Structure formats: structure tokens, C-alpha cells
Amino acid sequence: MSGWLPKSPKARRRLILVAAIAPVLALAVGLTLFGLSDSISYFYTPSQALAAKPPAGRAIQLGGLVEKGSVVKTADGRVDFVVRDQTAKALVSYQGDLPDLFREGQGIVATGSFRGDGVFQAKQVLAKHDERYMPREVSKALKKQGEWRGDGKVAAYQTPGSGT
Image (cartoon, rainbow, N blue to C red; front, side, top):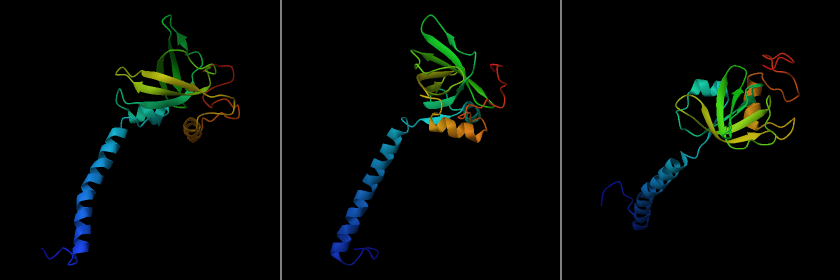
């Protein structure tokens, strides 16, 4: 045999066994990661989505505050509304019943994807369940932007009673 192989037959068998198993294991890990890539859902605020420009059809989560005066319900059951953070907005379209706690000015997380026309097509909309709770991703992103209103404060870009 070759000079790089161990002299012991037992060690040689182990090396050959490892050399045979390693590519199979690497292939299995690669296939698993490839299969999971479609189920990964990235979280964005509207300004992060604007900057990242996720491709149309990619499953993401979009979170922020529902802009006051933006909710429009159509006769066919579709609801269009605007989700915003401190610096950007995103138009969201959702077909179906909204959660009971969905309100203008409240934090939400919508799961879905952007369409080619830039509208976010939501498959699911989640709303916070009380005045102090907001999904962790939304609260972290809003705190980072100085937009956090968990203590009932009005956003810096809004004036009390203005509705914007």
C-alpha cells in the first residue's frame, strides 16, 4: 500500500471507513440545509425591507405598527392596510379575517411575501394580545429605531390626536 496509509490494518480500516462515511454525511447535511432554505422566514420592519429588497415571492415576516386611517376593507373580504416604522411604510394586502385584537396604531407581524408590484401579500396576520406585549422581533426593531411605545408614549413623528 501507499506510504500515507497507516501501517496497522485496524487503523487502515478505520481510515477507509471514515473516508467512505464523510462524503455521505456531507451530502446528507447539504440536502437538509437545501430543503430547509425554503422554510426559513426572515423578519423585517418596513425600513429594513426597503433596504434589503427581498425578492418577490420570498417568504418573510413584516412587522411594525398599523398606520392610523390606513385600513380599507373590500366587499370580497380583502383588507389593505399600511404597516410603518419610523422611517418607512409598506402596503399590506390580506384576504381573510383579521385577529380580534387587530387595530390601527397597534403592533402586528404579517407572514407572507412581497409581490412584484411591491405590495406585501400576507398569508397570516398576528396582533399583540395586550397593551404591553409586542412580538419580540417587532419590539427589538422599534426600540433600535427609537420608535418603541410599550409604555403608551406617542411616536416621535406623531403628534397626539393627529392620526398620523
